[in-house]
Amino acid sequence: MFNAKKEKDKIVKFIRDYFKENNVGGVVIGISGGKDSGVVAGLFSEAIGSENIIGVTLPCHSKNTDKTDALRVSNYYGFEMIDIDLTDTYETFKKQINKLGRYTDSELKNSDINVKPRLRMTSLYYVAALYSALRNKTYIVAGTGNKCEEFVGYFTKGGDSVSDIKVIADLTVEEVIKIGEVLNVPKEVLYKTPNDGLSGQSDEEKLGVKYSDIAKYINGEELDDEVKLKIKRLHENNLHKFSIPTYRK
Image (cartoon, rainbow, N blue to C red; front, side, top):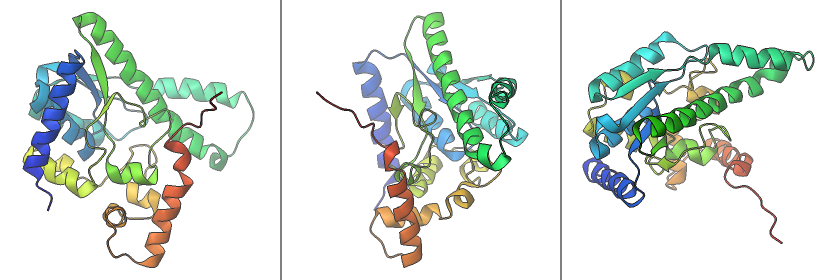
C-alpha cells in the first residue's frame, strides 16, 4: 500500500543527496497553478529551503486563474516568483510562420499547442542560467510531469519533456495528490481539474481516457477492453518521444 509520508521523505532525501553530490545551489520551477508543479514546489521547499527556489509563471494566452493559483503556491511555501509573459513572443513567432504560407486552423493546431511549452522551457533555462550568474551558484530546472502523463507520452518533445531533475515522474496522479496532501499544497491547486492551460481542454478530454484508468493499466488492474486499447495505442504511438535513435559507427 502506498505510504505518502514515507515516499515524500524518500523524495526529499533524493533531492538533498543530488544537490549535495553535484554541488547544486538552487532550482527553477515553472509554476502552472496545477497540482504537479505545486507538489514539486512543496518537495523542493522541504528539501532545500524556499530561499533556494525560483518559481516562474509563463502565461501565453492563459487564464488569469492559473496565475492566481500559482501565487497561492508561492505564497504558501514562501519562495520567490517571477512572471515572464510569453504572449507577445508567441505572436511575433506566429507572424514569421504566417509569412511561409496560408494554413488552416486545423493544420496549425498541433504546432501552435506544442510551440508554447517549448517557449516556456527556453524561458526556464534562461532564468536558471541568469540566476546562476547573479547568485554565484548553480540553478537547475525541475521537471513536473507525473507517471501517467509520461506513460502515454502526454508531453512535448523539446518542451516540458526537458528538465534536469524529475521527482514525481514515477508517481501516478493519485499518488501525487496523496503526497500533496502530506505537503499541505493549497486545496484549490491540489484538487483542480488538470489542464495544459493551452488548448482550452482538460487533460482527460484531450487524451480521451482518465488518469485513474492509466494508473490501473500501468499496475495491471482490471479495465474495460476498449479503454485498455486506447491507452495501449497512446503509449505505442508516442514511443518515439521516449528515446532518440542514434546511429553508432
